[in-house]
Figure 1: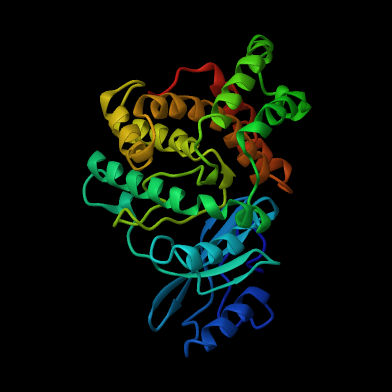
Figure 2 (figure 1 turned 90 degrees about the vertical axis):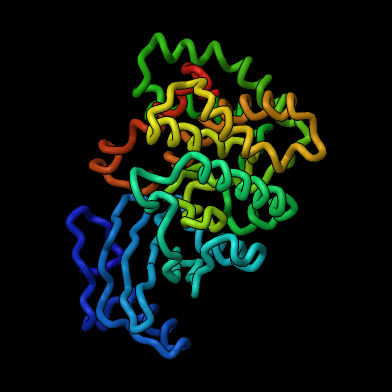
Length: 329
């Protein structure tokens, strides 16, 4: 079975699969490093939006990833980030931007791999500070990232994005009528929030959109997995991070620990901005990012079959409905 397929029962590509294009590409890449695979490609994570496999070599494991049509920009973005901020992201050994392929070194354990029940919240605070610094440093690269294919989702475009989602029959069919009407009534407020973000003075930058303890290495300063990312208001990254921390550590909305995480993220932005204004901007950005998260799931399911849409499709309307829920902090 070819590795480029992504059915749930996918099997490994054996080492003697000379006709497999992915394995042939990997062999050519490794030849430049004086290496060759010890075997074939061992699938580790197979999803409708991407497939990840392990490639063993004499110098350790490497990771092959194939992005689906909705995130095929990721290899080009990974390569560019490796050039722009080396040592702060996982830099690929090689990419094929046409086919959405990347081959990366093993970056070591993630923050989630810390001993015990996961990294303590203090480590999350440090990680969020590092990520905010990364976003600040990359803000001037936003146009270049958009040119590489990273979705362009600045605040001024998000009201139209919400309206389009609510007009989509595949979306509103998954929302109860009373909640759908509540979302329609929320549109003027949502437009105001987006205007406030535009006026916040915080420039757009890369927004990871899935930042949690399993997408950063244990040092807390090297980030990876940009398949859901976009160029948007950077504070929106707090949406998934705060929700993930709340889930992992059993924290209710408004818990002081979540407030500390938010404040740790805002610290690098506070040198030349009013802190109270940053807190208000962060609250609004997290709300608006819920629509961006819905768009990320919509992209992830591009080209997916009925089974995948049945399993994951509710995430698209589900994230829009989060607009009706309380803010995490």
